[in-house]
Image 1 (spheres, helix red, strand yellow):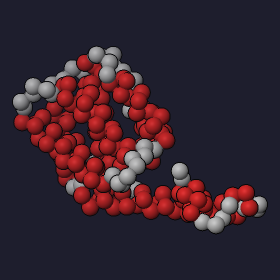
Image 2: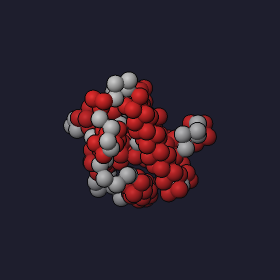
Image 3: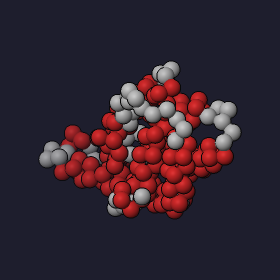
Image 4: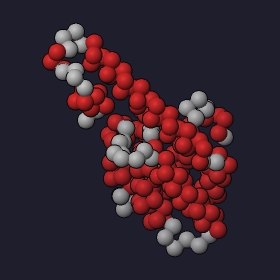
Length: 196
């Protein structure tokens, strides 16, 4: 049930009596405002709890980890292409939580199950901290993925479940994009250039 439907059900206003549609328009505006405020709270929570130096360290560490990996001789299409192209600026905390869960299960745990390198340990320690912050910033109650995430995350997960090492390497290289998107969600006015 949407906010406007909830308000309708808790007031004396009856949709069938709203002949000119004014009441419905006002309630839809209320719903938009509520969604905006909820998004602002998520942005504020991320901004207060994620340290940009940690994200930068994760980006730099991931580059170090990648260096000895095989290069893409036959590169896969971008695994995150639909998120990159259509909606990375609209992703919410629930979306990021799900993306991190998918990466944890299908990429990092499979690639680094027995990895003892210090760089990998540092990266995963930061990754777990990031997961904790994202979970704490997720609104309580119903966890709602954005429309774009709902449309694309299942395809991304299915791709990562393919039993081909090249897919995971490609996904790991693209994880830096996810980190950049998270920093953009911390402050919607921030540009990509400010993060580098």
